[in-house]
Every structure is written in C-alpha cells, then in structure tokens.
Length: 234
Image (cartoon, rainbow, N blue to C red):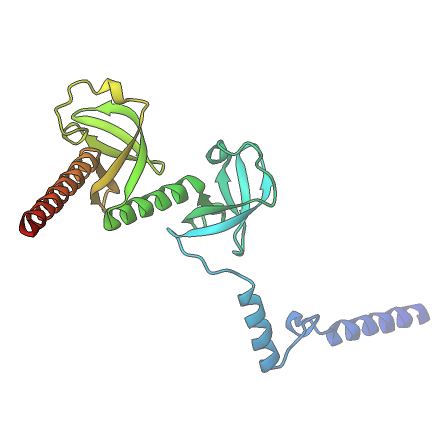
C-alpha cells in the first residue's frame, strides 16, 4: 500500500515537471538584438554580398577546379560554375587567378550560379568592333574560311563577313588565296540585333589611294605657286 502511494507521488512529480516545461522553441536559444543593432548587422551582411544581374560581365576568382567545371567566386551568395572546356586556352589554370565571366543564370535547377567565360569574351569582342566602327579605326583579323560571296574574318575573336567586292579595288575571283592570311580592315557595317559585322579591306586601299592623290595635288599646287612666283620675280 505504501509502495503504491510512493509510485503515485512519483508520477505526480513527473506530470508536474512535464507541465511546467516550456515547449515554445521561439523562446529558447534565440538571441534578440535591439532594432538599431539589427539594422547594422543586416547592412553588414548585405554589404558583403555582391549584387549581380543576368547578362552582365563580372570578374571571378578561381576557387576550385574539377574534371567538368571551374568554380569561381564573384562575391555572390554562391560560387559560380564555368565548363572547363572554356579554359582550354589557359595552360596553367590555377586557383587564385581571375577572369571575366558572363552571368548566364543566377540560379539553375540545382541552385547553381551559371557563368560563361566564352560569352564574356564574345561580348568584349563585340564592344571593340562597335567602337572601331564608330571611331573609324583600322582593325586586324585572320581570314579563317571562305563562304558564299566572300570570306570569314576573325576580328577580336568574333567572326565577321568580308564580301568579295570589299577585298580589293580590283575584282577577285580566287578567294582561297586569302584563307589563313592576316589582313587589315575597316568595320563598315554592324547589326546590333544579331551581333553581326561587315568589314572591308578595299576601304583601306581606297583611303590610301585618296591620300596619295591629295598629296600629289598639294605637291603640284606648290610647284605651280613656286613657278609663278619665280616668273613674277624675273
């Protein structure tokens, strides 16, 4: 009987302890901050993360290299991935090196930041071509192949079209002779929508001929003026 009373008393103690336990998780192991301190911490955290947008170029630092991807840190909340195939031209690729990359997607299905070094190079090449067109600058390119109606010239790493009529001032019928050669061009036309450019070697030749013609005319003018002065003197 006494044992039964002791057991009942023990159960009552356990029940009381059970009822007194605070099951509210929100009230335990949580540090609260004053509003001003919370705002300061939030600003510090936000400031440590770079804001990036898709379709823009950013600079990334190599932090890892796998058999399939190069992992780069761009200061975003997650590191970005670039296929190793886009670094084939880098013989001594190593951690710590920095490269410009194009933001393809801030988050794919697996939550990865997708980057592209190839697209960054193409974007920079196009910017150089547009600048050359606007400023009438002579560029250098490699003739990589022939195509219908002309040749394909690699300028700044971007394919451009060299029409057969723009190769020389005289008609050209054998395009093969130019493949593999480096030539100078002027960018005569660009298409922003499809990122396509037309170049001309003929324009350089014509400009050179015009310069020579102008120089000859100036020279003749000077000789004529000198002769008149001589005749007037005597």
